[in-house]
Image (cartoon, rainbow, N blue to C red; front, side, top):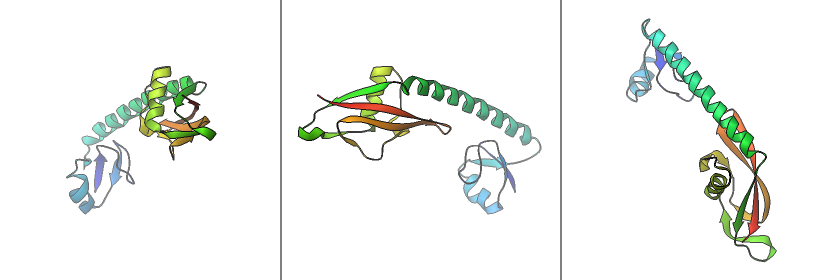
Length: 148
């Protein structure tokens, strides 16, 4: 059965794509969750409009992410935290602390989930954290952790 996707479905396609799926998959999953509708000749124009709108939004989102990246890559974000002897922090610096410091110092608003931080930072010094604002835009942010 040919269907047109209303939104992105992992493993199947993106919004506006025309896909061939099993009848049961459409009846039991795609249609009840309003993820797709049956493809007809009249819906083909609607699918094309959905793809164009999605491409325009994607290009605008990418341009905005690249603009933020050009601002943040050369900047060094300073965060002061209480530290003991040997440079170990009392506690840690996490993604939400970094996102708050970036917003205060540069004005760029980042979601903490866009920061790739495997473990919280527990030592003084400079650390590089990767930030992914768009599927095609990933850049490093330099963080300087100093003792308060």
